[in-house]
Length: 178
Length: 178
Image (cartoon, rainbow over all chains, first blue to last red; front, side):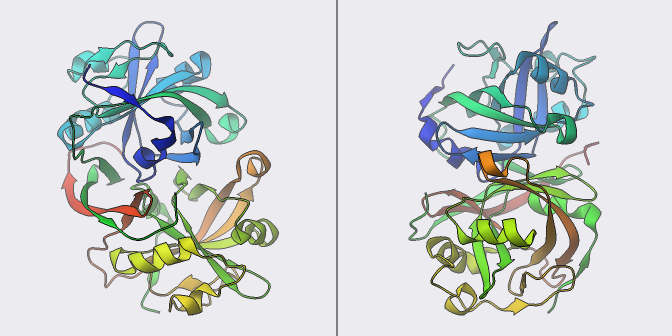
């Protein structure tokens, strides 16, 4: 794996701009992958991430049972695989095989990292108070990984019905914001 | 106001890609504006939006008391005003005056729409169970407005410390996703 450790204090900068992510979970038979856009940062450090996962998705049950996952951030190059993962169900498909993605075992959680993604966040579930009513999980990021060789990772942002906005230019303004 | 009514069923497409938004609230003395990136869709229709608002911000107290707000989506042209709103406090600044933004009164909520933003979502607070622990509010969008004359609104996405990614190209892939 080309990824290096990434400071937890900087994780918010990866998720705040709203990229589509691929969540991996460790199912009993095999690891699953779910495409996901409904997430938000909730705390800087340790980083907390809130996300909504439909209870019709097998990842919902796995996450509820194992309380562990990895949030992987794909770039434009993986767009077709991202849509593929969103359009198939882990009930009858091994998505790693189907979409030629490489699972990498990691230390903190049983769910695998997706090697092809430019960043991966190992997470544990820390709050399930809103799971029954809203399918809303709160995750703590335990460990973050990033591929430093990708200098300008262009993430993708779902606009609905298979349309995605791709990262454009970056602007910098004088700011006191974190 | 150039904005027209926008279907609630399409609101997710505005917020899923993760734009920075400007939340307006109706304070006792004056309306306030807060810059915000920590939000996520939680349901399609009626649209539910979860968001984190620091309890050090006056908007937190106003939202908690009035249970109403407007989520306004600014475009690149407003980037300096967006940072300005994020770097000042409504305690001692009238942000509408300070940043030459135009408040427009609306019908469903007391908080004003920001005329210069390309879309505005009138919201009421529907769940405060996670407010004490996480500053996390769940909002229902009651009414949505969009400026149809802006054909290619380029939203901005916070990367941290005043850096923003600007919407780039849009790609379309065959997908069964909503």
